[in-house]
Picture: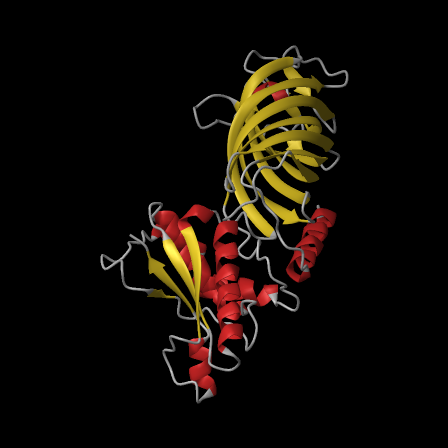
Length: 378
């Protein structure tokens, strides 16, 4: 057990300093495999350490947060008969002394999974499910007429964490609580009562394995906030972008807020904070939270069409600034299309330096003039 604790502590430390980014599709399939360590949790047998097992799984990810999984186990679960003599209700006396009981378990589960933060590199989740278990307890020469191979229903619940290892691979760690009949250990008058008042046995499994994602569908628009920009983004600090989005626009808030378009639709919608460097049309990192919010407005209002207007400062020739303003508007359009906004709802227009909102005589004023505005179209 100490080795397991040490392993999980090392895994947590690794994930804390890992820079691997989470990648996610809106829908996908994945297969999993790995090792399982089972241990009695509520049983008339004393738990012992000499246990082992393995698992295989097939998972369907319907959305970023909701999945269903088929999972099969092979377990070798050991326990020790309570010390002294064990007395059955029918009067049979079983000498226990130091006898260990080994139960082989083959089981299959159907689990429903909810991922709390699916876009993160370290993603915790909860699951609940049920299935069947075929148990074969071996009492190793002790006369016990109830220790027979049997198949029975079971149910389970647990929690886990996915650790991103790249685009297609994740490390999975799980703790699962399994509840089934007392046939597992072959003790008929089990004193352990289940949630429905019947004789039950419960045991835990600690799973460590890998998941490979295949058949991935459309990339998740929930997670990838800055994909699809067509201009050169060399030198962009993506980690800073992530931190800005998390700080100023939490996803939980975005999901709950219903955005309404102002009634005065002919008034231009100024995207305050969407900024460009001097003489460039690549977005500055602080622009992404504002564009992400603009995306939510457009997604919440599917009939809305806008003209994306690009503006520049007055440095340079008028014709050059007109071209630069058009490129800036196109950059914003590319971002919105990559987030799921139909290109048919978006048009671009450049005003160049012709419509300043501040003086071009100061650096601050010129920065304000390098902007993007949305005009809501009839």
